[in-house]
Amino acid sequence: MIVADTSAVLGLLDRRSGAHAALTEAFRASRDQWVLPWAILPELDYMVPRTVGVDVHQAFCADLEDGCFSIEWGSSADLRRALQLDRAYRALSLGLVDGIVMAVAERLEAQAIATLDLRDFGPVSLKGHPEIWPRDLG
Image 1 (cartoon, helix red, strand yellow):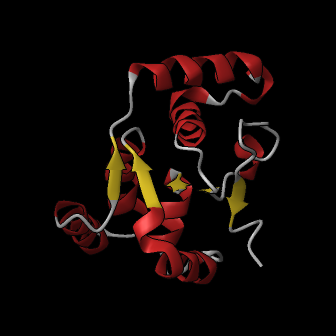
Image 2 (image 1 turned 135 degrees about the vertical axis):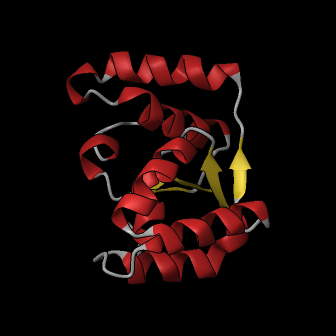
């Protein structure tokens, strides 16, 4: 399982991103293993049209509707774990969304978390020690 953060999906969608090629290659190699936690969807809905464009946003929404991405709708345990992580790493100010991504990765025993947000995800020690993609690729 590869759990994706908002930044990784933005990098995947934005051809101008320095990480676009690595993320695209990783996504193509393991498409059926990628999971989008529900909490990143509102962020993407807000950010994609503003940063990548309305056409890309419409295409992304069509992909969501067509089932191109697996959505993890989570559980109340994810919320509790996200808040625990936020308290444990208070100096990072992880926030709810990053905490949910991390909690989902732990619960699903993910191989990796796809993220460009190394400031938040890099120093956090998670159960199962998932890799950080694209940082740990290759």
